[in-house]
View 1 (cartoon, rainbow over the protein chains, first blue to last red):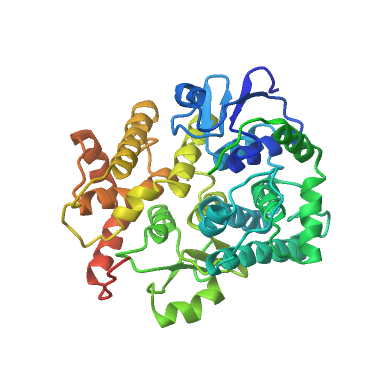
View 2 (cartoon, rainbow over the protein chains, first blue to last red):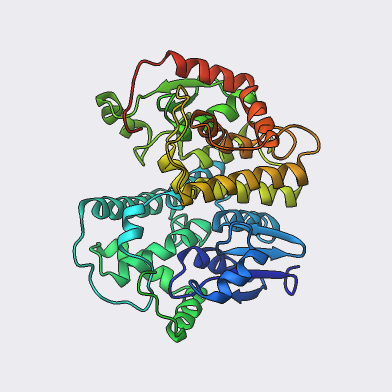
Length: 217
Length: 217
């Protein structure tokens, strides 16, 4: 069982979307772990990150002598190692679609991410929604609607029960809230389900108490 | 068994690194599939891609009525469905590291990818290797050296036998060759192993016969 020999290295809770993903997965599935927070853009980060992560980025996971890095690889490892595969849908087809939407988020949505950096404490509309941002937002919402319609019968999440796909879309749900981006009631329902997760509340509470302020997170 | 009900939708072989990854994996493991080539930046692409891929990007995989998209999700699906998991190292630790380096490639190396777009037919030095490109290149080579030293005892590839990690680093191997980027003999040995794969030769031969020319691929 995990615990003292499992450490997750994360950035600021207010600002680090990549850190939120595996943290939320581990918390929601009750995997015990130590947390090491390295605030971004600090000397401490620059000094220590290399000892934890060969890519020099957060998040990273230490399990005994093993280092796993990148949010997706950590989620795959956690699902295999501690969740009995429950990070993904049980059936092959939905699992393939879940991995597809996760991969699309992992490498895409550059415009939305650049215009709306995660900033959990923010509540203010985006000044101008330009065309690439609008396209990204529409695609995110289309993914949510499609997954929930096809696979979400058994719960409020993308594939019914909470899993890796939701952990991956949780940061973008917060961006939609923080920047007050346009969405429909059905989209807000999914956002509400994300925010209602105990782990999400714990993360947001911690973000609210952080004192670092990044101008350009 | 796969075959007539499996279709892989790819872009131009000369220009589409994301397409190369799952194509090479399927070929090297002898998975039978139909290929549908949609040249990038054409009317045919714009007209047809939506019927194959909800993200409107290549690659996409059709298996019966199931659509899987994104190079990584397709490789995971192929490994589970047809390879008995052999796309990844068999042991949990090396498998986690393989997924880490694949995820790092999947979402990273923006500078190298922007400066050195895949162009298999090109053989000309990059005019100026700026600092972000140099850092990306050094990190790619560090990953190769580290994986091969730690896990590559049983073969010429990153984890010994050919797998998803190599399929993911094959495109960047071609960029290093095409743009004549600096590397050591040990790095060239890995590049040679990639180019010696029968599937890689078949892909490069097809790229050489393509007639489309993109100025800014």
